[in-house]
Length: 359
Image 1 (spheres, rainbow, N blue to C red):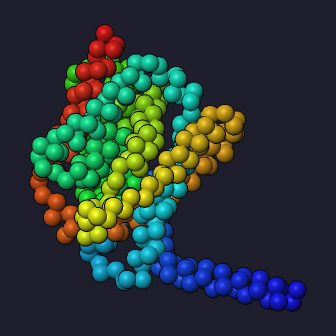
Image 2: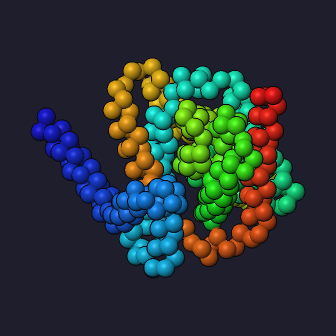
Image 3: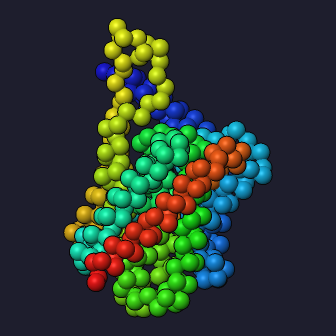
């Protein structure tokens, strides 16, 4: 009995020791990420970034993080906390993203929106992969670009990266590209709305179906009237749901690029790639269901959305602090062109499909 108590006590002490060591290793990076997150959210609340140049705290955090990473030589003690934020915290943020959408919102937008979203999103991914192959852009790089353009920008890129394990510079480039082209659309769409006198219903469906980031859609939809502002954001959030089937499909594809000599030996059967279930994508959908049927008070949902914005911003800060301009410069112009053409493709296709459906 005494022996058992001693073993339990020893086990508890070991766990405390391990936890203390883990905190010590990650704390410097966490503190840096927290500082960038706080600054980004405060900057986003200013008139400059909320009205004059509307940018989400996510994009601001990436920009600040990348600037710090490439201007200052960060101590190695910050690396573990930064990497944890960019990967693990991001997955938690994607899960809580589910509280921004409900099944009733999906049904309210109607079949026209659902059809346009399905066609535009699926076609954009396939088109990007096809064009990427023609342009000799690596498959993973093209897939990251396609997912970011067609689903939900940086969050989709990071979600897909969690499954396919791409190179850091590919992830950095894809996030930078979809942010750039989405920001261009964010300013271009409102100008076209006034210039071409686009009907608000068409505009809401078009903006929600083709602009990359949730915050960019919200900023671009301010020129629409009343209910159509909300419709644009709802359409965009429905696109976010495509993270679930895409990541699930990608788990069944062998993404291991490191083939050993043993794997090449015809006598020895190759090692099977381990399938990583994207639990964060599944739990994201669970949160959508909870938000739809649990009857949570509005103030609770609002609090969860605020919490999600904070941790998503922290994740983007981690990504920015982990991105090197030198590594991104090695990507080349072909991938830039691919991202631009893919962005234009989903914009034109969405407009065409919506035009046919509403005619």
